[in-house]
Image (cartoon, rainbow over all chains, first blue to last red; front, side, top):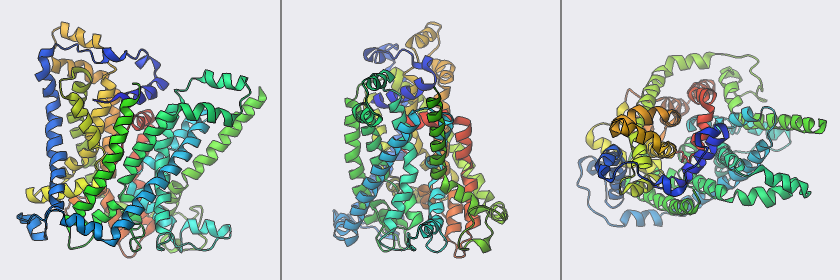
Length: 328
Length: 274
């Protein structure tokens, strides 16, 4: 079990408020020491049994069903009654040959990378700013969490109305500075940008909180020494903050990647992937196949879903490797 | 040190401005929820709710109340299921560490990476075959998949900080593993219990993918579908939509006020929000 990083971050978050709780992190070997005699393996597994059964029934089985869906030719009838013929890679071939595939893949990449870039840069800037510590800083930092805590459908519908071409407040703001009307959600040129903007807004708090806790682990003496040496704020950031924050940054970005690849609600509610395919990502495309029309086509939908899993897993394995290589 | 005081004051002002910019969409949601329908398409829009109307909120009371109750029920059900499954597992992973525990931890980590839409499609077939489509408890099961891996990780991380001496002492006093778990480990882990409960409630409350695929046709639909139905209506009454959105945001607000430190700890503990 590799909770090393979770443990570490949790501890760092905990120490900031209650140093006594984890005052003495046990050295690595003692964490693995067993206070239970080896004979109680069985008892230990009894504690794990519910989760193991659960993982089998509610993770492994749905995933298996999904793979099965993607390898058979299903109709609505055979979906209910079973007996769909095995069709090998047909669904995958059909999906990859579809012109929407390259669009969806490209949109997924653009959506994910641009979102992450802005979330990270803005989150880091805000974390550094709040780290200065000033009156009201803790309260304001807490308020910054709100976008991340709101149900996605709430954020999505709010942004939909703000981006409304005729009556949206965004276009009104642009009008005030002399920019003409932008069809945010109804123009194929802007739809993807619109959902990216909303997604950046939602993701900033996550980056801010994790990076802020990382900043708290950088010893204050380093900054004191640097300022004695006459280093400017920017130099301190470049020479101390950014390099020492690199492990936390890597984890933040990778977690962000895995999360952002999966985003569905926001895009579906704001644009349904449209107009045309202009804001369709792999997740909304998969949903469109399966549930987007009255005639569900689960085979190709599942195939798209499985391709998405593979991409997420690739980043996921990278994340796990990174996490394990970190000192606990 | 007046320059320092000045700088701190300047930072506070900048901080307030930044927060105001960040929270503008939230303000706008509230503003629109109070705007009379006939002013909705006015140009320029009213930046302040000078003529507030509560018709939007009345519509919520008339139409959406049942959805809110269902969401509450599903949220509480998800919290219960998540705690029951993840607290003992976290304890075992943190302290008992049987052979094979490492693999289980890895699987839990990977489980968090599976996209919700993929799970939804898998569940759809299963629910259809079992005839449990459109049930609130079916949705509890589906929603718990978002929270259980996270819960186990949080509990494991937290419980590994409990001193071994405490547990050995209980053993000396004759407590068996279960008794040690319920009488010592759980009470000491109150913070983890709160963190896991808060997040599993919030995620279940906010879920849209599972609700819209597994519970779109029944009588027991959650509030996210209530909003979705409003949006889908042709005569989009945006003050009613935004009023529902405001109400649906209440749990998030309550959570932030009552349990801010747990929220920060939960985010930091490596949450992959679905």
